[in-house]
Image (cartoon, rainbow, N blue to C red):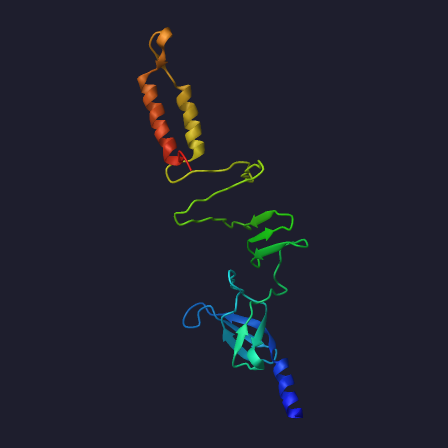
Length: 209
């Protein structure tokens, strides 16, 4: 009976093993598996067991290994925990964040704000495969695009809004009228220039959503 209790106690103690992240395999049959060295110097390798809808590739940190029935022959590796060298985003109670060690992060504030940061020269990209991108603001809020120099850019491979608008001003400045004062209109050459300009605008902007 005592031996049975000892065996049960050993299995309970071995349900969880604490280890340190060693390395991640980037290719081959073990691609995306990580190697972990447990507190008793046992080395295990497997993909981390992530919850549905979340995935990450840690480079270091503490790792918990769950051993089914206290047996290392059947184990799961939990996602790596951040090490002391990782700088975490500043959060208030109730906030949540998705982050990387020294890169960008997104913070979801308890009060309702969402903040996305791209550190250094990092780029923030939104990509769709043929779908729409919508920005809906309830309650009459404003959409603001800010840059360090106070300017923003919007355009495509053909042109940009700054070039189009400044060019439009130049075309209007150069308008020449034709005909008698009672029936004066813009002369045909100027009308052709404005029509060509309208074509350029349509190449950049859609006429409807």
